[in-house]
Amino acid sequence: MTEKMHVYQAIARAVSDHGVDTMFGLMGDANLFMVDSFVRDCGGRFVPAAHEGSSVLMALAYAHVAGKVGVASVTHGPALTNCMTALTEGARGHIPMVLLAGDTPVENPRHLQGIDQREVVKATGAGFKQLRTPATVAMDVARAFYRAQVERRPIVLNMPADFMWQDTSHSKHVLDVFTAPGGVAQGDILDEAIGMIASARRPMILAGGGAVAAREQLIKLADRLEAPLATTLKAKGLFNDHPYNIDIFGTLSTPAAYDLIAQSDCIVCFGTGLHDFTTDRGKLMKDKRIIQVDIEPTAIGGGLHPDAALVADSGLTAETIVYWLDEAEIPPSGFTRELDIEALTAHPTGSAKTAEGCVNYVQALERFEQALPENRVLITDGGRFMTEVWCRISVPDPQSFVVTANFGSIGLGLQEAIGAGLAAPDRPVVVFSGDGGFMMGGINEFNTAVRLGLDLIVIVANDSAYGAEHIQFIDRQMDPSLTEFHWPSFADIATALGGQGIEVNSNDSLEAALDALKTRKGPVLIELRLDPHDVPRMRI
Image (cartoon, rainbow, N blue to C red; front, side, top):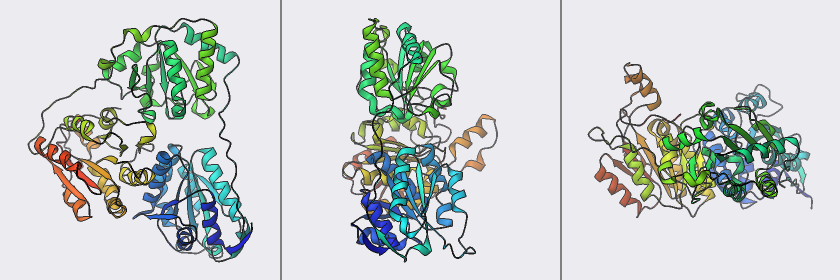
């Protein structure tokens, strides 16, 4: 059915036609009427952020946790430039979202906030889609949503402000997204790969973020081979409870697991680009056969060149390999029979010493692992503290784990925690941040979490320094004072912003904070006072 309406109404309707019920953003001249129509005419929910980049980050985490296309909206010029880091984070993380970005009026090229928005977006790695005319609104919106899903990255739909009050005819347009499993591996390369696997005596199965939907097939292959299972960071939690799961593969492995990987003679990799942290800059892949399986051709050969590469669906390929192993009556390797998984997954306890008025970080993480709600969604900011969180704090599954380090930035964690909280409203969200990251981005949006009434537990690792830089000065026997800061009390800030703030500076106060979590109402911030000299090094 075709309806007459203004362009701003047609945009809102077209977004709603795609099943969108939640939009993050910050209103301005070019998008305020569209946002209003989305809420009042379409029954949608608008979540206002304090900063434009935050709205994109919220939408990214919402997309990851909910398994939907995230949607955000900002106005033009500086509003869009404020989103550049967030858009880059989404593009590097291959997260599907649509950003409805206003643009200055076409008829006013000298507008104060005018900028070449296409070039801004291109620099981030996100996609750009122009709203062409008032008559093409529904199709342009549909193309943006289609591209976000197929290209697996943010798509910015550019909306000129002078279109908004023009008349148009609206009819529903939603494009089919072809989500059937990708190709099945076949041919000589498949034969070569199966030959390498069949002859392996110490094979391993490695799963990345691109293989999380293939959990059962990969477990079946591992069991058939009697091979241990491991994941990249992005797939953390995928093989929970499997008896031969050695957890994260690479620089985040335990020392025993790292040694085991080094002893392996064949690694079958599914849905991972094999970047430097996974392979320890190639060290872990030396003197062994590497088979890489990915539906995306561009993911293969980027980190290192495998011995066999299969551009194919992970699950179907695992099933195919099992079939031919059975047909050829290849015996299992027996590799898992010699493994002590408890020893392989035990991380070092580290030193228990710490300065007066501080807590030991590793010991605190071990207590958080025991005391935090088991059904949590875990979000981590970037920085020196996060690698220990990745290693020591478990997650129910990969969809419940949001890493904000795709671009190596700090200051993105709390904003993404808000998006995750709205995607999983019945579950507690736990976010770990450093002090610098919280001051950069978290402090802007903590009150947003309060206003939304989210069940959010924020843990700020506060060593009063930029820790990654602090340790570099220490290593070179230089004065680290330029990296040190006398921040205000984060616990007091949290309370002033409407939440509950708790400072932890001893083991007793840590236990009191954990007890307080049992009766929490709304966002809680736990400030861990740490000695920068005692914080473990980043595992990179």
